[in-house]
Amino acid sequence: RLNNPDSIAAIFAPDGVIMFPDAPDARGHDAIRALLAGIFDSTTVQALEVRPDTIEVHGASATEWGTYTESVKPRSSPTIRLEGRYVIHWQRQPDGQWAIRRFTGNTLSATPM
Image 1 (spheres, rainbow, N blue to C red):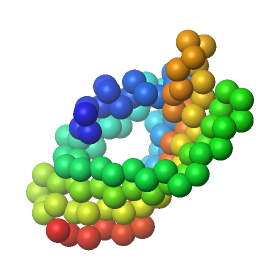
Image 2: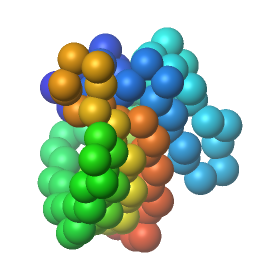
Image 3: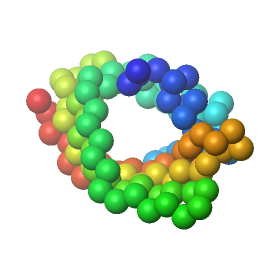
């Protein structure tokens, strides 16, 4: 469900935050859903490969570092291959499930396909 803002927002903790470079933070499910819906209104994610590099677990929290490759199709442009890195802070929720508390990433290269 790469282009479904509801599915993606659901993996965030209620106080989760997306922190993208050069953009205001999106805090909480509603703001995360709105941010993603705006992105998906103009861009379709065609493929996403996530490669975790390191995951450190400390009790009920964990930090994940990794890289990604993503193919995106902006509505009015050719498909672009993005490569970048990310950091996710996970938090175990009261029900025992892990949820994203903080997410940030940045693109290192963008190549038209």
